[in-house]
Length: 259
Image (cartoon, rainbow, N blue to C red; front, top):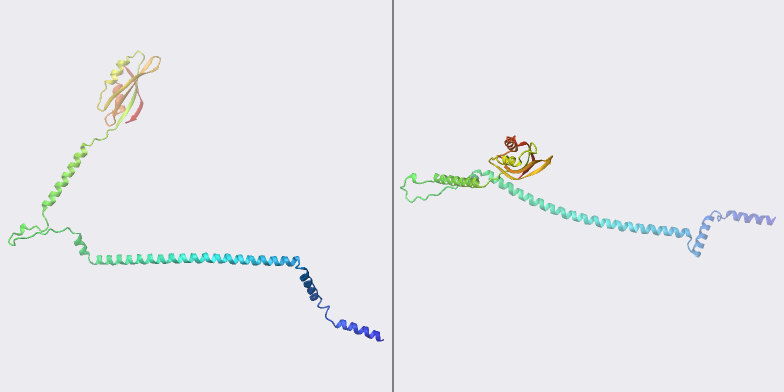
């Protein structure tokens, strides 16, 4: 009977203790004790490294923000300097505009003075004797000056016209190469060339010539001439040459060049 009472009292003591409800705290305390004795665990090292990288990143971000702030401050200072310069330029322009407006206003108030300043100067005539007639005094100058100026102007115009008339004018000329074809191989080519050169006109100058074989014993006369474009044309030249129909069959322009 006394043993049973002692056993019941021990169970009651264990039931009254709260150690089993605080087991998690004791486990964490034991873990911390062993980690302190054997060094930090791998998970703790990883946590520390992660925390260190976060600190470095924060430091880097803070430095970059500081650099950006400095750049912003420098730009603001340069903009302030430019603003001051612009203000100065605007003030100068405003002052110049005010001076101009005041000057224009003064000119508008006194148009008679401007008209008088632009008028021709009046000749001053010194009167030695008060008894002279009024006809001898010419206050506004004589008409002789106008006549003299007109005469000088006309002389200059005449001299310019004479100089221009003496200047040689450019005459347009052309070099023409003609192919004069006979009827057959029995045509006298010497006589044919004489007929061609017998055509004489103002502005026409015959040049060198030669005989060029055509075929079947027939030769054509190739002759060069220089003409003035205003006086002689190819149509007139062909018309004059085709009059010698006994020797000339046809005429072609082989080459035409401006000189």
